[in-house]
Image (cartoon, rainbow, N blue to C red; front, side, top):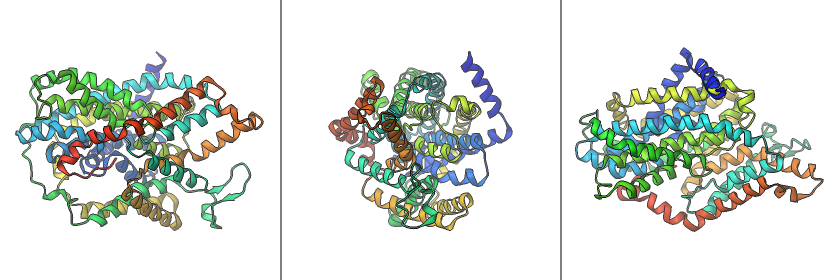
Length: 514
């Protein structure tokens, strides 16, 4: 009953004209971001962070705007997958397998509407999972001491490459780079400047919002500049007729059991550290194919092949919010960006979030329910509008991204030095992308590095220099064990799994990034 009462209070917070307007704007912009190949939810949220701060929004409105962008981008990713066979982001790759064949049969509108319904089902029930699971996880998190938190942060880094990773060494390098960047600034314990090179602007450390916008948004601009005039301009693709928009009830009814099963699978994948929406989509599709594809219709335009990955990846998006809110550890790349926003707003995620900032967390959860309804109502009648977004050439889009980045960051800090740092991170992100080094571990290292160091020092000092305290409790031993398993599994099985997940992209030659 307490949970329902808290949720009712959250709706009282979310149901204001400002918050409803922000949710609607976030859903609309997120769908557009998701529809454009290459951007995806992580980049979409990162690009719009400066907008949230420039508008002077408080913690709850900012999170409502950005999480609506997150959910909207997960919805929007299927548009280019179905119409062009080019995934808007990596979780939408599996939608290509049956979505594009449906479009070729003249069922593009039905496939888009069906994917919207499946996305709603997955995200709606995943949000209920967040409501029920996160408070219980908070109770477990209250058992954590400094040693357990250090092990938890290590677990986050160890599993960040994900089960689909093919090169854990690159993920480890990126995490080490992020931890190194977190060391810049004045040591909180001794007061000695570290790695500042005499630059007073670095005494407070590197602003992680500057790092995020540079790594994700500006690096996207640099990638475009490198590839301008090539196959990145998707407006040259042949146009697909939308056809009938509303799918017949018989089609939706046949897909309902699929949506139910894959919602559960996707939510579990989202809660698990390092799994995320990409794996949730892949597992949902492959499990459903083995379970119901008795006539071999999957891959040739079976509606269930559209519903399965869409319900799975949207459920995983909701599941990834559970460890972020309850433990302060992101479950995906986009939730790592949202974690940075929370910290920038002086809101500390973790066990005390539900006690200290109930209006923020429950207002956010209520807004997720509202945003899902908005997205369902928006995505079916406005399919024609969103498909026209695919005709926007990158030469128009990328200058807008750069403008938002520069104006937003300068509006937040008022420092031209931060603009130079942002450009530096943009170049760094471009180089890391060319080397196929993941960006999210860099961000996570920058975010959690200080907390990781503080908990390590505190645990060792409490134990009078005895390092065995780091594995001195059953909880910390369990976390270390999961960390080791999570790091080793991708080395053993990652290459094969990643290859199977990449089949739709390889078949079309599309360019996607997580």
